[in-house]
Amino acid sequence: MKDKLSWGIIGTGRVATDFARAVQATDGGRVVSAVGTTRAHGEAFAATWGLPAWAESIDALVHDPAVEAVYVATPHPCHEEHALAAIRARKAVLCEKPIAMNAASAARIVEAARATDVFLMEAFMYRCHPLTAAVLARLRDGAIGRVRHVAASFAFRARRDPASRLYDKAQGGGAILDVGGYPLSFARLIAGVVEEQPFVEPVAFHAHGFVGPLGADELASALLRFRSGMTATLTCAVHHDGGMRAEIYGESGKIVLPQPWIPGGRPDGLDTELILHRDGHGPETIPVRSRVATYALEAELVAATLPAVEARWPAMTWADTLGNMRGLDAWLAAVHRDDDPQQPNPSEGADREPGSP
Image (cartoon, helix red, strand yellow):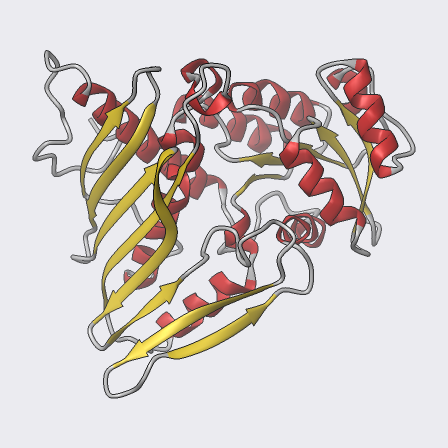
């Protein structure tokens, strides 16, 4: 690949804007085209970012010879259709999380990439950030001893609005699909370190939550247990400000991440930190700085990985994505059964891996 990877963006909303801003400010990539839901949206986006072109349709964008990689930044229910269109055109694909609405849909995307030998990665930004690498290095070095528990939350308060994607189940709204993948993927990653694997799946999964008046899961929690004995408590919310934080508890200390998912607290932030607590020592704040904004880190990773078709750990591999989607399916099923008193909750007392028979 050339030094500058040429990107086409499907979508012109806030996330697409953050991605374009980040990529256009780096030396490793450039955005050359975009397509929106209307011609006016595409034209306006291209004008804002000084793009050489904009596309009339998704088909036109993915078949544009100037486009080498496609960033899918559309609402969740569109991800499968748009990712498959780019894969069929043999363009590298970076797809916003969640990669699909459910595990079956995610599997179709992954199988298409495998069959076509095309790069595909689910865009969990934090997995590409040096903060994650710094945490993993300290865990592997035994800085806090054997890890026993992870507590992770991504929970914020947004106004209930029937017109908002966050509260529309048809658009993938609700806490679990929108942000639950962050704490779930983090727990699976840390459990993998304990078992000397890239990631592992829980062997027990207990989940509950609250489904609000608009039908979306507004608050959800889960308790996981892994084969190693490590446990995890996860929280996600769209109508309750439970914070965005992760803590890793070990035999001889803990690691605290005040801003694990969006390091620096904003998409263009460069500075963040981890706080290391060790027995016999005072808390040690360790600054971590990124060279470029978080979205640009994802784009640079794609460029550095090509012509290989899967990202390097700790970014999301295909197997990691599929495991995470199975977990989200199980979490959703449990919480929405909670909302129906006539239905038993299979996560109650469950002692099995999510998605297993």
